Image (cartoon, rainbow, N blue to C red; front, side, top):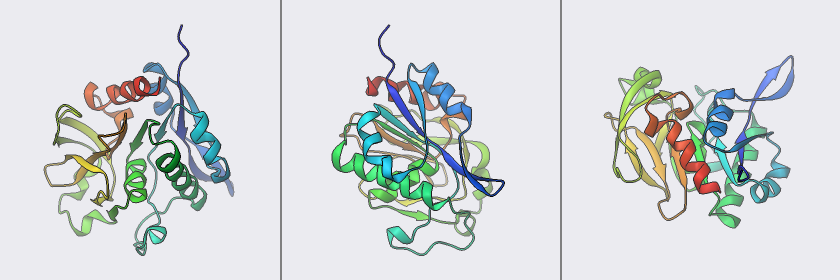
Length: 223
């Protein structure tokens, strides 16, 4: 059998009895394995970002809480639930190194992962959707439609999302799909082999083209 490509999956940080603990729902690993990849859970150590960028064949940046936006030129809204600083520092370092040294490495960003991809590429966030979207609750643990701007790159359909923030400006990335209310739902860099961020959770999305197929495309691009 051909060697399964190594797919690095970023772990979240949680507080467990006062100790920072790396954790990740197993759905991400299951999807990567089913797609033909070998999942590798990445602890958020920014000192290791350079070596990991070189060693892994592809990456999944998982969902989580909200980015702190001061590093990207804006104050953080006091109503957000910020990620642990160590996680944000690691994922920022990883994305910057991939951008500068390994741009051909495939990346799939999920929810927070998509937002971090856009921030590192010069984008900005809507930090609190209830202020701007009367239907913001429809994006919190619900299924809803998305409409693709390029059906050859991503299908339209129904996805499962859970977020109270969204991308307002995708920076140098292309806006690939939106929800009916205008929320940016997918971004990519079409000149790269596979560099895609989605606001929904493909590990929990039933429609094949917007769920399992995204992991399959990541693994194929990582071979």
